[in-house]
Length: 155
Image (cartoon, rainbow, N blue to C red; front, side):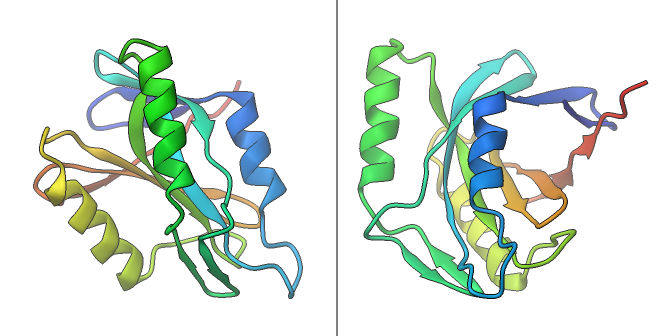
């Protein structure tokens, strides 16, 4: 569970999403960046991520760069939207970095801002970077402002 402390907004990743992240962590020198889109529910102020699409054949993957180009991501999002009668929706993007505790590059930040500002519905966009050890999780609002989530500590 993750929390945006200043606003008491909670974020939950289903176990299958975390398993997808684990599958693509860049734990070797040969591993390339991977990524996809995040799908799930918005429940009031809170967000539940139920699926992370996996890299597709048409995506561009290099050691230090990932570009989501394959239309399969959109096809999967459209299918889930339709099958759920609009309950499951696009929430944002995820990709990996070859560092233990990831932080966004200027390219990441610019891309996130662009996607958030381009949304016609004005909704915020979830942005996740999967590192070798931890995650970077943020929400980019309709004005392009970024707010970080913090992982909730279990007692």
